[in-house]
Length: 372
Image 1 (tube, one colour):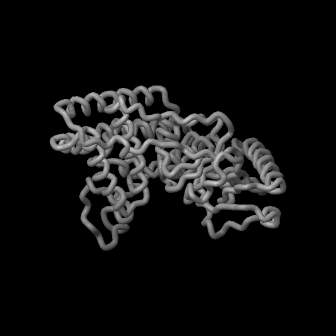
Image 2: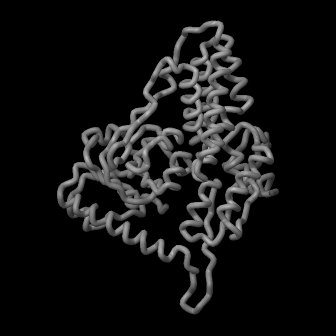
Image 3: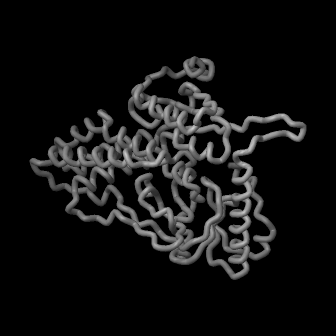
């Protein structure tokens, strides 16, 4: 997406004096719906000082339940969902993560042990220089909620959030699991207070064509809750308190966007050819395997760059050969014979990986990072 400063609002909108809240564009599109605040469970809700002799058993049972549940979800997942659920299973099974929780169990309840380890890992991620790693904090939170819910079923905290009409959902944080739990028949758009372009939630939103903005606080639009709003993720604005004239503008904009999309779909699978008859290959760049299917559906003739380092950056140890094979296989299956260029991992400099223990270099672009 272009820089936000390059966006110029059309005069046909500004002359109507609309009430607009600006945000960062993460997934393009225009949506209309009732603005609904997402009610979410926070891991801290499970905190308890109560500790008994069954804490280790409680954690082990919860761990097994979550692993089983995630494995079942993977078996039934779509291509877009599978990779992210697999990354959550990798976190749950991470030996350092599990060992850290068990170490805390010596002096803490299961809940507090999980919370302590989650905070330790999250603090490391928040301090990372890579924005991709910083955005993995939400995945750690997602896994923590799953473990805590399994460990304390008696708390009976409400985990379901139901949409029953076309809605634009606003949330401080929305984990990938919470996103996948939303009814996409009614989900028209997303407003996320904290999210970046490499967030797994945003990657899913993009894959499913859900217009998404970030950087808008819930307090900015409290008066608009449960009212009809218009989210224009092409312009980077959320329109609230719309007048009849503004409503008419967005209805027309939505109709034009639908017409344009239908027209583009008609061209998507056609060859890109210059006026003098030269064919030009149009390929897509992807960072994870779930993006491949959408790229080919939009007419990509190949994958020009598959950034494989992202597969290595979401964990405390390198993926094994089988996991890497499955990711590459997903892309090749989606390509169905079309070319795929796989870049070996581009690591170092602004993309550090602690478990590789690479020495600091004055110019990493000419050092270990360059030797791939």
